Image (cartoon, rainbow, N blue to C red):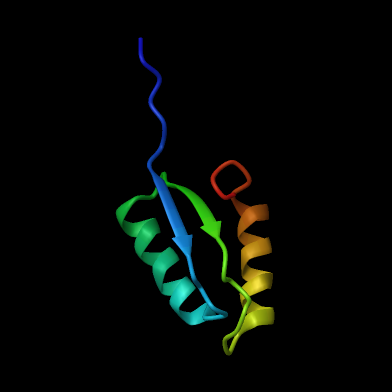
Length: 69
């Protein structure tokens, strides 16, 4: 029997935009609720909401420890 894995969603280049990240997470939760989420680079290199975005990324990892990397 072949094991199946949850779909993988990779997110990059957030550039300190918490509002866009929240909208993206809402869409992922609606369309791929069992997704594994990986965030890559350029999260905080510039942008208007860097501290809030960092806090959200850390909270998301705590909320979904097996789904978020």
